[in-house]
Image (cartoon, rainbow, N blue to C red; front, side, top):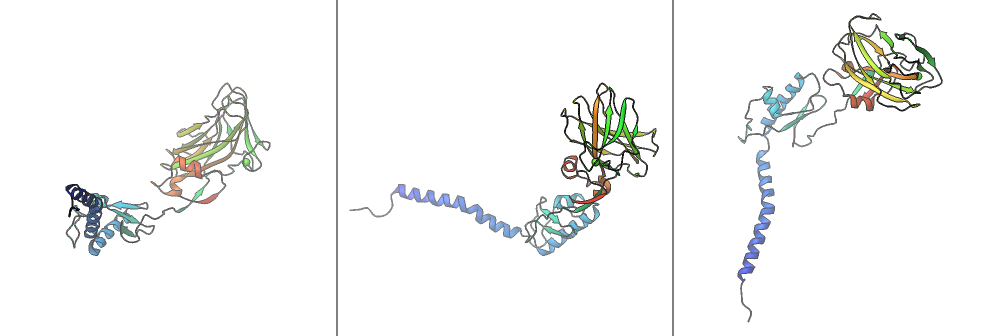
Length: 304
Ligand SMILES: [Ca+2]
C-alpha cells in the first residue's frame, strides 16, 4: 500500500522552490512598493522645478540638465530635500531636465526625458577670398628664395590656388586683416588645404593676433600646426584651434624646412570665430570643427 503524505525530501524540495521564487520576485514587489512611496508630490515637484528653472535662467548658456545636488550647491534648495507630503528624503542625484525654453521636468515623471538640444548657429569665414579665386592680393612675402603665384593648374576649391615656389628656404606668406578686430580671448578655428610636390616641404597654418592692425605689429601672438604628412601630390587638411591673445587677425601659411625646395599650393583657407558664433563657454572642440567645418565663403548655418 502506498504511503500517504510527503516524504522529508519532498518537503525540503518544496520549501527550497518557494524560497527561490521569493528571492526572485520579492525585490520587484518591494521596488514597486517603494517606487510608489517615493513618487514626489505635486507641491514638492513645483518647488524643485521652480528652483531648476531659476538656476537655468541665471546661467548664460543653455543648461540641459541639473541635479538636486547642483541646486543645493547653488543655494536654490536646502539639503536634505524632504517631500512635502510623504516626509521622505528625495535623493540628491535626482536629475531635472530642461528644454530649450528653460522649462524643467523631473526625471521619471511622465513624458520627461532629455531632449535633443542641437541648435542652429551661423558661422562666418573671417577671411575673404580664402579660396584665392580673386588673386593673392594682400599676401606679403617675408622671406627670400620664395615666389608667390596665383595658380590655376593645381587647386582644391574653385579654379585657383595660392602657389608658393621655394628654393632652399623657409617660406613666410603672411597677410593681415585690419578690419577684423575684437578677437581678444576668443577661440578661433583655422583650416587650410595644402598640396606639396616634394616630401621634404613642411607647410603649416598659423593664426596670429596682434595688438595693432599694422602689417608688422610689434606685439603679436600666434599658434601653428605643421604638416605631419610626407605625402606628395595630394590635398591634405591642416587645422588648429587658437585662443586670441590680441584683437587683430593676421595669418601665415608658412613652410618650415630651410633646406627644402619645391612647390606648396594652398587653397580653402577658413577661420571661424567660435566664441562669437557659439557663445563663450559653448565653443565646439577641435575634433568637432575638423568634422563639421570645411571651406566655405561668407556665412553658413550649421547644427551643434
Ligand atoms: Ca581655390
